[in-house]
Amino acid sequence: MEDYRRLLLNNRAWVQDRLQVRPDFFEVSAAEQRPDYLWIGCSDSRVPAEEVTGTQPGELFVHRNIANMVVHTDFNMLSVLQFAVEILQVKHVIVCGHYGCGGVKTAMGRKSLGLINKWLCHIKDVYRFHAEELDGIGDVGTRTDRLVELNAVEQVQHLADISFVQRAWQRHQRPMLHGWIYDIRTGTLKELVRINPGEHPHDIYEYEFEE
Ligand code: CO
Image (cartoon, rainbow, N blue to C red; front, side, top):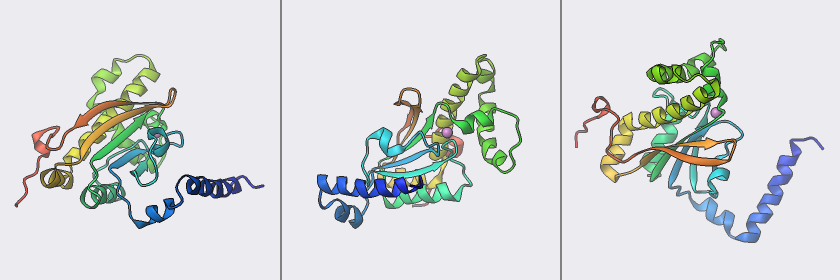
């Protein structure tokens, strides 16, 4: 059997499992989605959002990219975020970084990789903001872990800078923004930072709305 066929067979088994637990599972699922959470995570195959959070289909709205970035010119991320915040009106947006992140490791190096340099440059910027602390960490592994944390915090702050997030805060008093880290060595999640509706990392990012 070709290895990819295993995935299709798994799917058949999964459908049967679901139906056994709840015969109307797919009818309910097909009707609508009302997730309370938007998950912005890394594309890394070892960090499956639903699995590590024990959530079911319908609970998480998900966006994943290399190194869980919130880049202000990324229309893909922005479209997902705007839909989540304005239409789904999610209660929480979670940016989840992870130790051992290949994107962060690569950003710490000097190798030129073409197009991906542009993406990783945003992580290099985070390094520069915290260069004093990071340069002071002798062990490369520890330094990388710290950059993983600082990067997740920075991306959460980027969420708070976005005008339609601030507008949603004003209108619905949600979402709350979270920065988490997943430890691929232990499987555990930890909280790094939480931003309540209305809090700004700095006044310079605060917008005034006419209404
Ligand atoms: Co990663």
